[in-house]
Length: 109
Image (tube, rainbow, N blue to C red; front, side):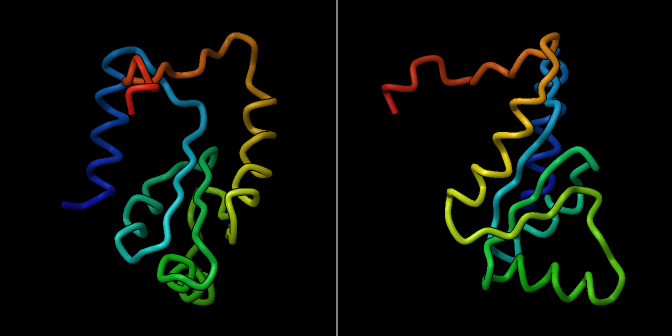
């Protein structure tokens, strides 16, 4: 099953519930994370893990002149990801509502 199809299907189903994501952040490291990465928009973020397949694929494609629409932020640790995500949430318009998680009681996880 293609992760790109899964992500697209999830976004579409949430839009049908009137939930719109202002920014999507996608974190990946494998070959199978390339397809969802190329489906992201200019306002989205993709985080390829340095030294892993997705990062290497993106480097090779960039050398050939192909660039993703989404911002690309390589990472080594969760701190790298958090440093890039926080500014996006701090700049959210006060009229924008963050999507509500589908799992209502997260302590049960």
